[in-house]
Image 1 (cartoon, rainbow over the protein chains, first blue to last red):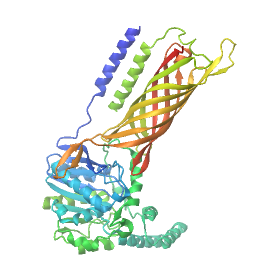
Image 2 (cartoon, each protein chain N blue to C red; image 1 turned 180 degrees about the vertical axis):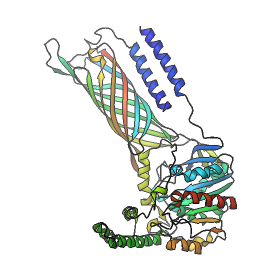
Image 3 (cartoon, one colour; image 1 turned 90 degrees about the vertical axis):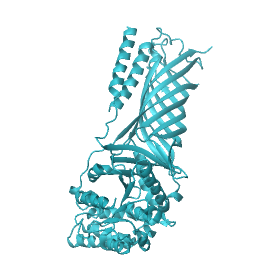
Image 4 (cartoon, rainbow over the protein chains, first blue to last red; image 1 turned 30 degrees about the vertical axis):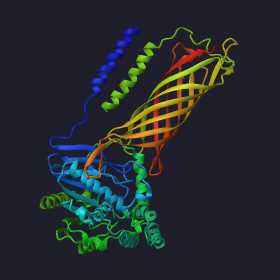
Length: 349
Length: 224
């Protein structure tokens, strides 16, 4: 009886092994989906290389936040079309997303983030085997991309940059955002909607005329009420994707850590980041995209100021586009963004 | 899903195989469980399956295993009145030190390898059911589960081995049944839940909640 039981156990285990030893689902046809880490000092930046394995063109996506993550970005249907033609590099920034390591606050600076991005660009060329590299920075990522491009050495490594609602001037952008929000609050009061809430909102900004990290959460909460971040959620489409088995608690911790510690020239980015006077140093081809309904970094006049000051002679910007989008047009008007991106990349690769 | 199936099959196989071969003699431990002083020695060899659960959306479960050997440091049996004076109800109160090694595997992210000397208090009721409270302080190494590249001084990239050293702090509450107490099988099963924190991550503690199910082989010997 004991021997039969042992034999049955062994047979059961053998069947389980054979059934369980199936490989992970592979990407279809010419698609690639590989994970890496890029070590910079004591941090391991997670990097996912996806897209067309045969393409020598790569687009590096620089996520927003700060403190956000690129791990879920691929769920945006926009990237499905882009990955058919090009390689796309998704990476999490230092002290953000699910990046691992013990980062001291002294290393949480835009200067260090720019150095990290330079590592990613070189990695893309050497390991991901893409000779023509573009960067796509959105929101805070657009601000980081702008800072990265101030260095001519960095510009020479790239074919072009897609800059989407960039946080290149958070210092003045926050003031414009408050004005935008106060105008919306007045509109809601005039409509007789939730008077107490909107009067409290106006009172909040009279007490906090300058937004620091501590006030930004509440500010974004108000913006959400009047669709200042996402204008029309029905336009957004997502696709199911696989994600690594990350420590989610780490992601939540980093989402708090990064905005609280990030600096520019030793001061908080929320009160001191303004790259306007240096934009003339950017010479490479740039595609600028800005949603007309953006309340976090209002298009008027941040977009015009960028266009006026940037040094590039090959600037693609259409003021009449993306009228339906708020802060992230590549989510809300992804079809138009797909068309514009492909046209820009093909023209400049 | 298939990986989870393979993991649970492996665990079930180990338990079934051990159960099938661990048949003790009748009444083997009847005279060993004594009440006056330290009259017996007891050791445990345990294997446990761990499920590290992320309770944020989306719910994420990462599996691991741990292996420990328990050495009893203190034993304070308690004698309760039974149905007759010839069959007292013996409650075992024990403190163990449990050197434990284990791992938690997170695909395409990291593998956490840990070594923790646990301190445990086990309260075994007269029928064999026990409750155990553990405290852990130990070391964890999180190894990257994807190729790691580092830019060298000459600008080229080289694949390197990389991971992070962590302090691990936690505890768990476990319930189970000790077959060796009243039956002839020198086994105990347990299940429970615990929490551990690893440090440092940006100078912060990162919390993990996990569930555990385990099987122990119980060595009981009369002390000379």
